[in-house]
Image 1 (cartoon, rainbow, N blue to C red):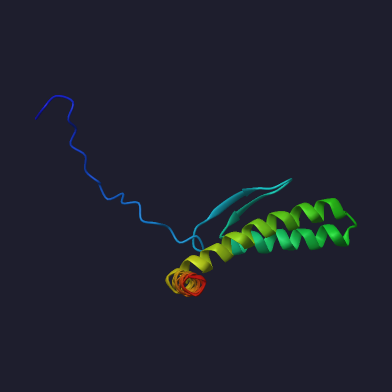
Image 2 (tube, rainbow, N blue to C red):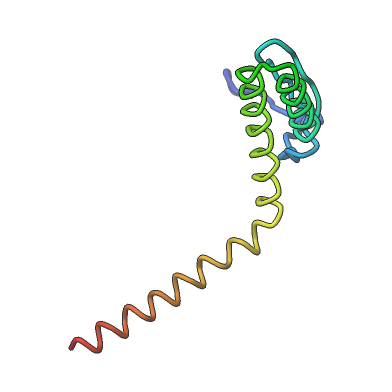
Length: 110
């Protein structure tokens, strides 16, 4: 074996893309640390926002709602990735339709 060459084996640690819906998140919020899935963390922040509103603290409620919105966006992105091939085909079809219309106009001008 040549000097400097290393034998690298995977050793069972293959890094498969992880499902964002099943992934555990660790959130360091304004005054609380929440752990769990994106849906669990979002629901907990919504609950904290409701509690803050009921106690009259609108600033804290808005902060919690912004944190909840972040995790809701993660959930929506995961859902759109799951339906990716279907959503990916639509823009291509629209591009082809627009391309055909553009060629038609060019031919009409000539």
